[in-house]
Length: 238
Image 1 (cartoon, rainbow, N blue to C red):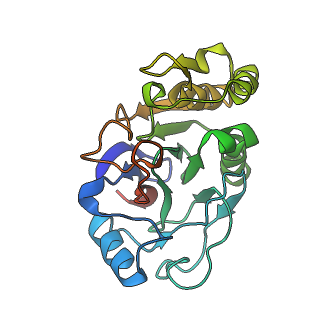
Image 2 (cartoon, one colour):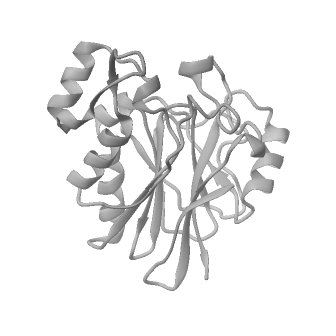
Image 3 (cartoon, rainbow, N blue to C red):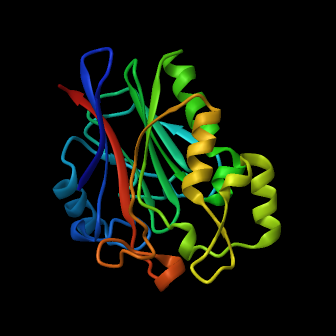
C-alpha cells in the first residue's frame, strides 16, 4: 500500500488516502473470490470494513454511514455508482482501477471520499457530484484531492470526436499525443482541471502510468488485463 495524502481534520481525526499495487494482489471485486478479496483487503488496510460499488462510469455517489463492523460488498450485488463519501471513522472506502483515474478527497471538517474517474465519468461529472456530496454533508471548508495512478497520454490513443468534446469542457490542455504521434487524452490534465474548477486543492498526484509500469500495475488498454488496484480513503483517531 502506498500513501498518497494524510491530513489531520478539524475534529482531531486523521484522514488518509492510499493505493495498492500488484504487490498487494488483485483487488477487483468483480473477479476475485470473496474469501481471497477479504484477506487481501485486511492485509492492505485493516482500519475497518471496506466499502465498494459496482462502477459504471457515471456520476452517482453513495454515502457510507452504516455499521462500522460490516463490509457492504463482499456478499450480494454491489450498488451501481462511481464514488463513495463518509464522515464516519473506521470505514474504508474503495474504488478500483486499471487505467481510469482513481481520486481521493479529504474535507477539512472531517470527511473523506473516493471517486472512479475515467473519461466517461469525468464527462458525466463524477467529481462534481462527489465534491457536492462532501459540501452537502460537511459544509464549506477546504477539500484536498489525491490523484492515483492511471494511464498517461503517451499510451492513451483517443478518438478525435470524443477528444474535441472533452477539450470543449475542460480546455485545450487535455489534448496530447501518444508516443506514436496519434491524438491522445491527457487524463491527468483533465482530472486536475476538473478539480480546480470545483475549488479543490490538489494535494498529491501519482507520477505512475499504469500502461508503462507493468511491474506494479494492471492495464486493460495496454495489456488487456483484468486485475485492479484499489485507491482507498478512511478516517481514524490520530
